[in-house]
Amino acid sequence: MIKFLDLKEINDGLSREIETAALRVLRSGWYIGGNELRQFEAELSDYLGGAGVAGVSNGLDALRLIFRSYTQLGRLSPGDEVIVPSNTFIASALAVSDSGLRVVLVDPNPETHNLDANDVEATIGPRTRAILLVHLYGRNSYSKEFDALAKTHDLLLIEDNAQALGACYEGRRTGMLGHASAMSFYPGKNLGALGDAGAVASTDPELMAIVRSMRNYGSSTKYYHEFKGFNNRLDEIQAAILSAKLPYLDDENLRRRNIAGEYIQLVSNPLIEVPSMPADPQEHVWHLFVVRTQHRDALVKHLSDNSIETVVHYPVAIHQQSAYSEYKQLSLPVAEELASQVLSIPIGSHLKDSDVDTVIDVLNAFTY
Image (cartoon, rainbow, N blue to C red; front, side):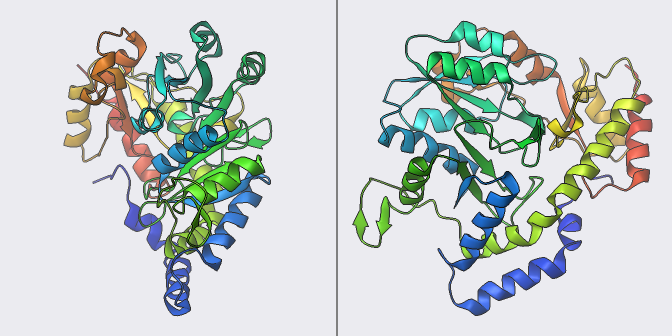
């Protein structure tokens, strides 16, 4: 069986580093808000290029803390609108809704599956206050056009960087391209913890001070609370494990980029549409390799019959989810078509070269 993702094998390759980190935390006697968290935040800051970093409990909470902190700063108010791509994991929208803000869904570019600046500009209204750029599947979504839109309309540019840590745009890391960014270290991410974990990054020290307080019950000094905050802290053991794994992230991303290149070059079945490599390959870290086909169920069965695991990211568009039934009358044809056609195939350092060859051969052998 060629697994979609084999976390055990990936983590076994770093077992010595991971076990050393976990044992260090165990022996320290300090498990929340200590040196391991501070070290990981400093290392991630260096990796990103100097942003302030706050480790938090998960990627959704990272986004929630950004929106809530901007509300505390007076940059956002209840009822303000945030533009969100219609093709993304539901967490992107949940963070907006949870903060008392209104989700405005915009269909993505059908080629990149990310937001297009022209479509976003056409949607900006009098209550629009922010654009949430989701670097979906690991592909950078930012462009200079988005920066110009944000400046022209005085909008916050917030990055959902949950899937793209390590991607670059003209030499700058995603997560450093907007006003603030949220990251996820869910175990299946390119940099994955051994449980839930996330981070907020920004070069705005005022925002980061509020985020750090809000993640800790709204408190900067124990038992003194400036805000009505949350418990969204990143624990010491996950921080230590992430520190152990961070030096290997670029290697993981390079392996994924090389596999993606093989798929793009060698999958030639006219029934299967493969994504394109960006003009600058550094703009994509291939958290997911997503193909399209009008015969998805048949392709899933064909791959399964040949012992290849697949996953659908994502089978139901946000506006068609019960949680967002108020949007059910919307027509978002690109998101709806993607939901019915996309299929994620195996990618990652757990794959041997022979596995990649097998996936390519099986895809090319598919008929309908």
